[in-house]
Image: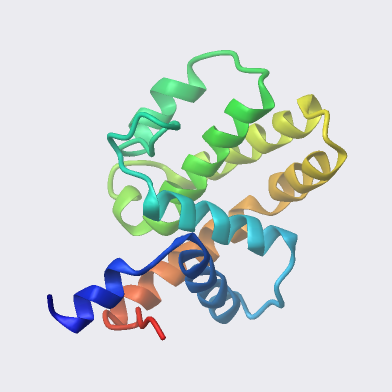
Amino acid sequence: MDKLFQELFGVDSNRALNFFLSGLGEVSGKDTNNEMLYVANVLAHYSQVSRFGSVSMPPLANLSEVFDNFVLVQISDPEILEIGGSQILLFAGFFRDQMERRHNVSWYDKVGQSFYDRASVHSREPKKKRLFEKMSESLPDWTLHCRDLSRAYRDNRYVLKVN
């Protein structure tokens, strides 16, 4: 097998997390904090989960599916609200350029804020409660940072290097 492809297949969850974490740091100009670590973790998770997996909730196809699965139903489970918020972070953030052709992504930013706000209200874990509160406040900023990261990765297609 080609050496390049051997290295690409060697990406584990830690390398994926570090890949997105370093990229977010560059595009946001911020030092690593809990929110950035969380956002990088969301991106790393969805980069390694099959859309057709059966172990956990797979990423949906687009914001229309997010609407159908999360917006049209009353949800009070903080874990499910977090999943809804993370899917919006993925689509209205990292895939923002593609999604804004068909969706009002700014409206989805507000929906994601609502998901994280409700997750903070219903969460029983104090650390998650505080993280969800912060994500509720700053989600529009993070979706724009994710969009910028996606653009940077598209502009520099050979950025993935495994040492």
